[in-house]
Image (tube, rainbow, N blue to C red):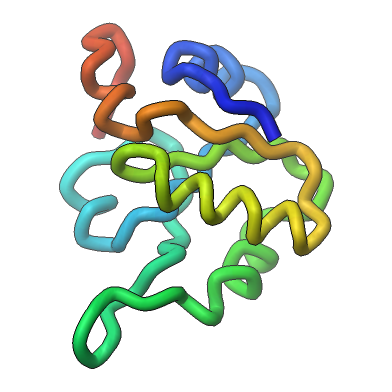
Length: 113
């Protein structure tokens, strides 16, 4: 797993890398990297946010183990957790955006939707 800057993520996105946004659907709806795919690693539980037990199953429905996947969240912590979950499930080509979407948006030259 590589830790990459938002600019590196943007450059890789123009090649064969895909972006997996692990934030909540609400966060994703508000702002996102164009072309990214949303699979939340955390979901709303009865009292608080909890791990999405369907996370790996949902990722497997959208990505193969051979896909090159860039993970992003709000600040990098949820995507870091997702990287470890995916790596333990056999995904090998993973990169995490350092600082998440906050860092992406601080780089004013990078697009958001």
